[in-house]
Image (cartoon, rainbow, N blue to C red; front, top):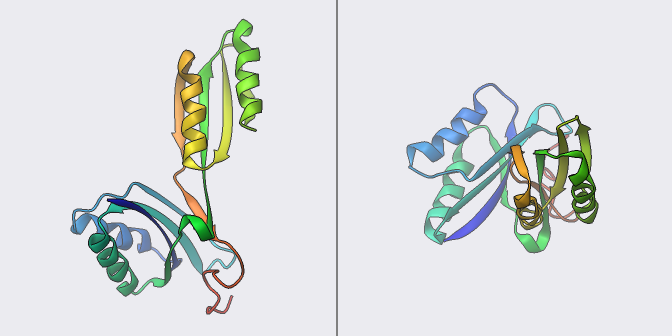
Length: 169
């Protein structure tokens, strides 16, 4: 089993997310992560989908997604030629005397404290999955009240590999 990160350029129309996600559910495949957002051209959205499977299953998924009418382009974001990131927000219960510890951990990971209340702090961190997992591990001595992850999003490196080179924006 290997992890595959797909970047899919789709028409920004009603129901496109349902059609793409439905393809996975109809075939019994699980989506590990899914992010969607409008591109620089509001006519198009970019989906980043993370899925695990054996090579035959992943190849079949790519072919089936490519056949969908709303899909304009699909590429695999391979680690060696792409940049992938994820965002987390973490709300931690922190008494006054423990705040310097949280600030120190936050500084090491280049995270941001985005909210402070008398009983908690909220931290924002962006990076690859390993970085985020390491950060969360360091918070184990604290009470994590809430945590949310956006899922992976990414782009290929360099001009030649960009999605949409063949599409008029």
